[in-house]
Length: 156
Image (cartoon, rainbow, N blue to C red; front, top):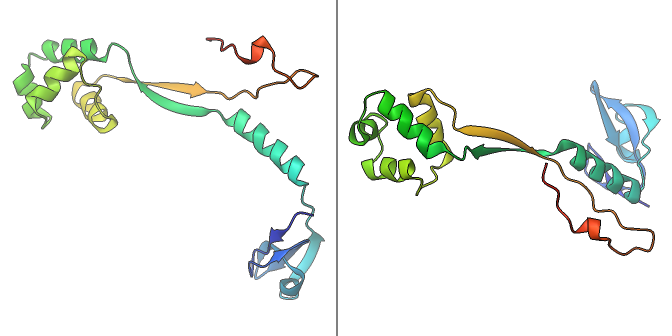
């Protein structure tokens, strides 16, 4: 049986009651239920069901990540030149070292996110792309073994 914690006292209990205490709905143990009005018993899913629900939630969520555009060096250099700034002037205006600007514009240095934000703001450009990663569960065949499809990653 799944053991769960009381919202009021924190004790571990096998079953909880849903009660309204001081105007707040809580899942409480039998000892704490006397402090409020019991409105129902809490039905918790089995551990296997909870795990399945968790996996479904994680798969549905996906993960949003921010990536630096591939041609960031060229974009920065063109915009700086269109503004009529040298690397030295540009570095002075955004309070960075000239060598950092030179390395960014040649593609040697991938700038950290705070510097990217500073460059975007000063130059009025966008250097970050939003990507969403979705997770797919691996499926096993009826025999419990893997298939070739389990090892192939498809590009979308």
